[in-house]
Amino acid sequence: MNLKALPTEVRAGFEELSGAQRDVLAQAPAEMRGFLEAQMKMQKEQELTQLITGLLKGDHEQAMTVVRNIGG
Image (tube, rainbow, N blue to C red; front, side, top):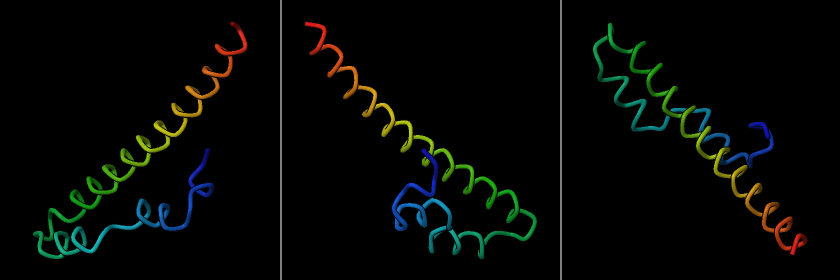
């Protein structure tokens, strides 16, 4: 699964910083902005990874249920 397979609204939520995050960056000292932005992007990446992992886990569990039902 890749990011392009997700609906546009979901994808946009992970690709862009939220308004609140942009506000925090704007108020942060200049020397901290790069670090904070990188940290926020890494957090979004982790959230996306968790989402995809959960989706794939659900697919796997459904497939295993089918296999168990066929097996007896």
